Length: 409
Image (cartoon, rainbow, N blue to C red; front, side, top):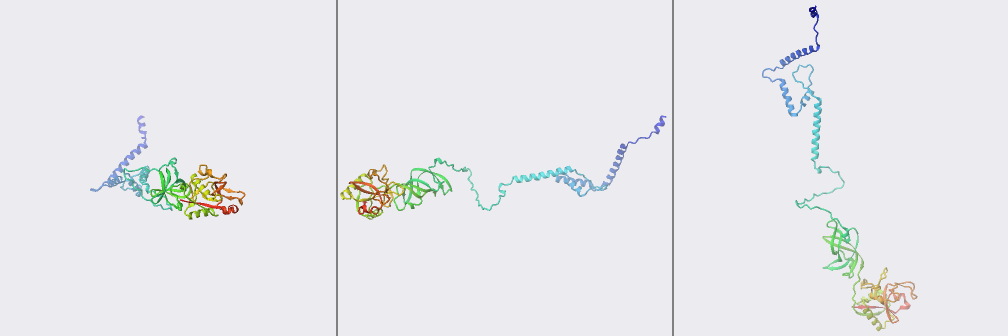
């Protein structure tokens, strides 16, 4: 029974093993066929070897297998072809990676070139204004000097002539070798414009400056006289210069305090006419500079019997001032005030004078008094201020009783 059973049992087929065996046999046959087909004739290099060498050359040139990829795109393998060419497949991930590397390489080259560019290669925005530029001078090696702007300490500046159109300055006018110089009592630090350098600078310890224009000093003797000027000051050609604009105040001229010769003229004239007639006679309208001179003239008047005459003197004031001064031949004030508390003449003024106006009973209305005269009351001579036209203002009282004193040196 056992034997019969074994015979009746059919062998069981394993599909997997059958496929493997079949595949081995098929592959073996295919390999043999391919080898037969690819066997080269005698002396001929196999196609496979040629293709392999070409692929190797491409890899040497490009460093990758892009040549195979291009060839595969251009000549796609035919399905079920019996061609003897070797078909090489490619990996899309490798292609993408290669492309990324190439882009990174291009970007790196661009960055390196950009960093290497000089700033001068940058393009400036165009402007309608044309600016001509010049190359900066090269400084000698080893002699580089740090350039810094001067910081001005204005507390050390005595006169700021840069930030103002005009400045006021005190000094004295001198004549030196045909040119005029304005000197200061003490040296000054002046902040001014240096026209050569084109900037403001401080010029220190200046005791005098050149006078650029002397037009306001013409027609009179201004030398060696202290004055207050309104002027402009600057430096040019290495020299500080001054342009005078206005004489604000000037020291009176010094008069000869000696006792001279005197002439007494009786004439109904104006004060201005008396000044001119005195100069025409070779002198000037009298200027009394001391008590001694005053007493000398009084004695001459008493001796000559002039006690009823009102004599013009060479003194006057301005319409805006109440101080009387002697004036020179150019009608300019000289010396100091004659009606001030420190003047020698203060004790010789008539009581209540100078009054600057006359509103007395003899006056026809208010009369302006702006010149000086000398008159006698009860045997004593006094200084007085009066009208510049005594005979005209007081015809009944003073007609024929007006005169002037001429001083001759």
